[in-house]
Length: 437
Image (cartoon, rainbow, N blue to C red; front, side):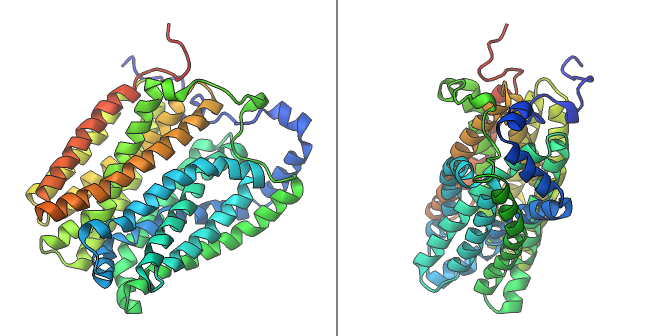
């Protein structure tokens, strides 16, 4: 058991809780920052409510689309490939939006940008249900951009304001994120029946985004009163802007491709799992419930796997394990999609939740310092979501050409095999930019 570090529990794991800004420099150079933080921390319930509400919105607007994809495509007369754009476009803009998020935070402050992202998300959700099909795709782009801002800035906010409780707060926001996706997927069809249209089901989630935005308004105001433009959640200590060249690091690319491959599998599942079930004779409502259950099970994987990863020097076994779980679920969808649907949902959910948690953890564990960890996170999320965008579109096209799901699912198995290999590489006991003895 030489690979286990008994002396370093997760709450004390290196880098995970390292603040991105040097405390002494912060006090000396920017006392107004401390004032702003104290103002925010004087209202802990408001801050926690804001984090939870923002996290609930980080997947809900996407997960609620999947059970209704057939109705959306039928309403606009879209083929399978075109219908998959409803899932693909948000992913593309989640990748592109990740590039600008840190710049916006430095200019306007993290709290202000988070509040603006929730307002943008609310507008994108409403735009998706406007009559012309172009509004559907434009709304998807706006939704993806808003979620990108939330994705990138929320971890930095937690690292900045809760450096001693980063692991627990990360667990809180990831659990809320999965919960939002679960509820959205489970209620998509019932809400469609209640409102009488898929438009009513989708637009209802604008209410949650609007409430979350209102909760963040006072925090954005307090932040901007306490500093010139608020404070970015991620900037290097001591003003250091450079670091290891990530583009020349094989380990950084392995982490990025691991993030992208697991995201590809996850978003293919979001886009097509309910359709696979209904194409094999399952009712639409039950298909939505199975998908929601699979999303719910992800909470177990996303909670347990990072705990294990933080206590291990090498995470190679975990990378293979989560890949194998997803591969078994995919094989199940091929051989008995309806009869074993709930079992396949469990396997896919555990594997996907574990793979996501492992990807996020390895961004930190493979970095030599907090600044590098932030840069690796930006690289992995940008490249990862752009790679993931290929999945739903490509498998939708293959399904349309082959008129079946066997070939697309075989391709999914290939991705699972590649994910296992990437996990073997990214899970090594190495640090980006740190020479190995």
